[in-house]
Amino acid sequence: MMTKPDIWYVAFGPDKSVKSDTRVTNGVRTTRTFKSEIDAKLFAREILAKGWTATAGTLNPYQPKRTIAASQIEDWTNL
Image 1 (cartoon, one colour):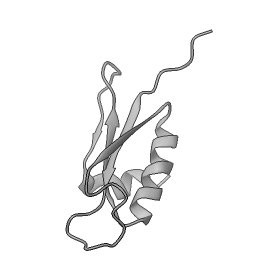
Image 2 (cartoon, helix red, strand yellow; image 1 turned 90 degrees about the horizontal axis):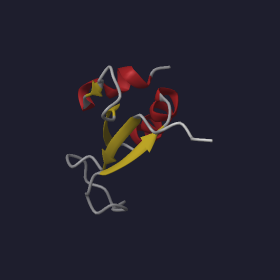
Image 3 (cartoon, helix red, strand yellow; image 1 turned 90 degrees about the vertical axis):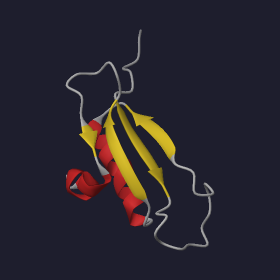
Image 4 (cartoon, helix red, strand yellow; image 1 turned 180 degrees about the vertical axis):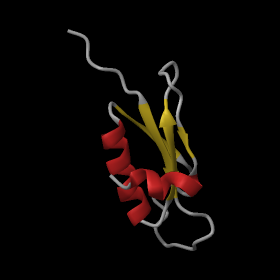
Protein backbone atom coordinates (compact mmCIF):
# COMPACT_ATOMS: atom_id res chain seq x y z
CA MET A 1 0.00 0.00 0.00
CA MET A 2 1.44 3.38 -1.02
CA THR A 3 1.41 6.25 1.43
CA LYS A 4 0.12 9.67 0.54
CA PRO A 5 3.02 11.90 -0.58
CA ASP A 6 3.96 15.14 1.14
CA ILE A 7 2.48 18.04 -0.83
CA TRP A 8 3.09 21.07 1.46
CA TYR A 9 6.27 22.62 2.80
CA VAL A 10 7.08 25.21 5.45
CA ALA A 11 10.47 26.93 5.24
CA PHE A 12 11.45 28.60 8.50
CA GLY A 13 14.24 30.14 10.50
CA PRO A 14 15.05 32.77 13.08
CA ASP A 15 13.96 36.31 12.23
CA LYS A 16 17.25 38.03 11.36
CA SER A 17 15.84 41.42 12.38
CA VAL A 18 15.34 40.20 15.98
CA LYS A 19 18.37 39.51 18.17
CA SER A 20 18.01 36.25 20.05
CA ASP A 21 20.11 33.97 22.22
CA THR A 22 18.25 30.99 20.74
CA ARG A 23 20.50 29.98 17.87
CA VAL A 24 19.21 26.45 17.31
CA THR A 25 19.72 26.64 13.55
CA ASN A 26 22.51 29.25 13.59
CA GLY A 27 20.42 31.52 11.39
CA VAL A 28 19.98 28.88 8.69
CA ARG A 29 16.55 28.34 7.19
CA THR A 30 15.15 24.84 7.34
CA THR A 31 12.31 23.21 5.41
CA ARG A 32 9.84 20.62 6.62
CA THR A 33 7.23 18.83 4.48
CA PHE A 34 3.66 17.78 5.26
CA LYS A 35 0.93 15.59 3.82
CA SER A 36 -1.85 18.15 4.41
CA GLU A 37 -2.35 21.90 4.42
CA ILE A 38 -3.78 21.72 7.95
CA ASP A 39 -0.61 20.07 9.28
CA ALA A 40 1.54 22.69 7.53
CA LYS A 41 -0.58 25.51 9.01
CA LEU A 42 -0.34 24.10 12.54
CA PHE A 43 3.44 23.80 12.26
CA ALA A 44 3.73 27.32 10.83
CA ARG A 45 1.77 28.64 13.82
CA GLU A 46 4.31 27.04 16.16
CA ILE A 47 7.15 28.68 14.23
CA LEU A 48 5.49 32.10 14.33
CA ALA A 49 4.88 31.72 18.08
CA LYS A 50 8.67 31.42 18.50
CA GLY A 51 9.08 34.77 16.76
CA TRP A 52 10.65 33.17 13.70
CA THR A 53 9.79 33.80 10.06
CA ALA A 54 8.23 31.31 7.69
CA THR A 55 7.04 30.80 4.13
CA ALA A 56 4.96 27.93 2.80
CA GLY A 57 3.61 26.37 -0.35
CA THR A 58 2.93 23.25 -2.34
CA LEU A 59 5.65 20.96 -3.64
CA ASN A 60 6.08 20.15 -7.34
CA PRO A 61 4.36 18.50 -9.16
CA TYR A 62 1.26 19.17 -7.01
CA GLN A 63 -1.30 21.41 -8.76
CA PRO A 64 -2.56 24.02 -8.30
CA LYS A 65 0.74 25.56 -7.19
CA ARG A 66 0.42 27.68 -4.05
CA THR A 67 3.03 29.94 -2.48
CA ILE A 68 2.51 31.70 0.85
CA ALA A 69 4.90 34.62 1.37
CA ALA A 70 6.19 35.62 4.80
CA SER A 71 3.95 38.70 4.65
CA GLN A 72 0.88 36.44 4.18
CA ILE A 73 1.74 33.59 6.55
CA GLU A 74 -0.14 34.89 9.61
CA ASP A 75 -3.39 35.23 7.66
CA TRP A 76 -2.87 31.79 6.08
CA THR A 77 -2.39 30.09 9.47
CA ASN A 78 -5.75 31.32 10.79
CA LEU A 79 -7.74 28.12 10.60
